[in-house]
Length: 279
Image (cartoon, helix red, strand yellow):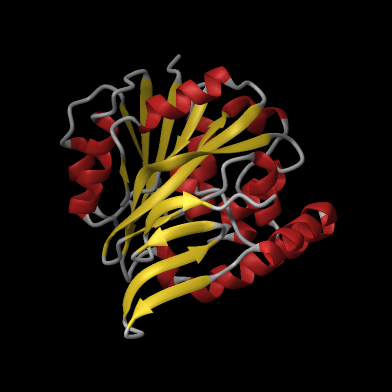
């Protein structure tokens, strides 16, 4: 049985993006994994050829007979996975070479943590770092406002999902990841590695942009459920938010020099300098 199952659903993926995605996993420093790639666009022969062009026994290619949608496809991958840990990875992103190694080491050393993720490095049409809080309590406080745990960089203990009968819920697509974390909030603890382990491809045709309205509706429904179930986290989040300072310094009101946001001081608005610690 492999230590890790990497789960990647694909749907009409740009072949060049898919190649970069696949190769970033095959070139990981950590080697004990299976790579499950599920094609939810069964009529797309081109991307099937891309997957089959790799002669690596760790790749397990599955093709749906008909389009099932993202949540059903993710659940199918969960059912097929054999690894102790599940590494979630989207079809047009790039994992840093040590991504699996870092996450496996953290979960092995911290049995109380059920899921680990990291920051994201945006690239392609937009370049910046998306930060995320480090510790469980802060992650859950922010979860009452927004998703503070990046799905495409996450690794989950498989037995937590199995033992609690937790799967992706199609009703909340395309925010099925946010709903998954909401279900896990009362069951386990989260942790974010404090550096990017995945490069997130930002472009006009990714789900974040093409399904923004639908995602917003799903997000609001999940947020209300979280606030109702975890009012203490909501109260703590509002207290934390009141302490935060948002400040921008721009030369001639145009050239970014400094930004303070979420207690972080950023040079040129994207290079982290240090974090402000409140007493």
